[in-house]
Length: 318
Ligand code: DON
Image (cartoon, rainbow, N blue to C red; front, side, top):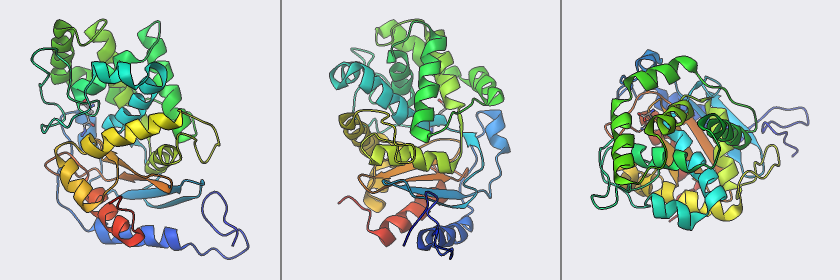
């Protein structure tokens, strides 16, 4: 059987078991209408609550998709592991984890919680830790810092990415908790540089546009030890992917991380716009889009569908 890069047979007949399995999951879990849209950033409240897209990229570059897998949305917190990967590549694990912890916080993603002694955030997946991690990316100016982040996320996705300017502006206009966090970290000495500059880069980073298919390729690059399996380009060194996946496994699904690890058993990261990545190391990366969120802020349909997929394909790590 010869498959092309989109996972279809190229010898005439189009029959694709993986695409069929994803289409089944889409049909089954689209019915799941529980959860709520994120409304604290006004444009996110306009998402279509019925959307559900799921995509899978194998570690050897075959791509599969079903549902709204090509619908653009802003990446939000799903950017955090990829920016962590960039910071780790540039500075090394010792320096990054000296500045930002690697322990689950047991609190919501936007909690105003920092180490009382040092001001150090608990981990790079909650907002405080992500703002601090973004600020660590070496660059002469915040414009250059954002360009490096945008370019790196594009290398993970295998195409150049853009920013949704409306979401960026809305994020900046409503980001009081993030603004407070950045100032607290600056006061405690855990954030270097001006809070406004760090926040501007973080807000732009959250507003980068992707679709579920991009997220699957980004996830597959982490699954494939840092080499994008579609473009063949090395994006980050292999040891960095191990560090990123370890942090994702314990902290990626916020306060739902324990339940997720129990049910799905894969390193993952979710975001408030409904994006989710999950990585099966050495095998594949999944990307989902489903804007209805559960109480922990995780996309309801994506969590349910990936639990099923993990069972069907035997992906649970344990
Ligand atoms: O920092 C924020 O508020 C958002 N722009 C990103 C947060 C996010 O996606 C958290 N996810 N659950």
